[in-house]
Amino acid sequence: ELFPTRLRSTGTSFCYNVGRFVAALGPLVKVLLDKMYEGPNADRLTGVTMCGVFLVGLLVLPFLPETRGKALPE
Image (cartoon, rainbow, N blue to C red; front, side, top):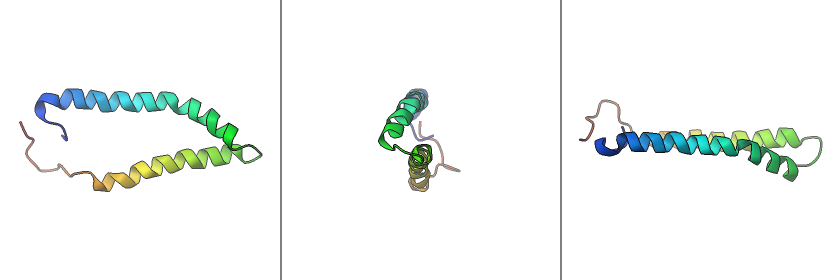
């Protein structure tokens, strides 16, 4: 709904594949964070860091344009 009609499928596919690419990097990021946070709380700090990134994404959502009830541009 945020993309023009002629680019809607391309935009949707692009967003989907960017998410897949970022998800594929997840294990690598976990290993790097584990090396950065050494000690008994390494897993806990790694989890808190990764959850923090997720929460930043949630905080951005209210600032996206609302498309409910609006006509889709052609």
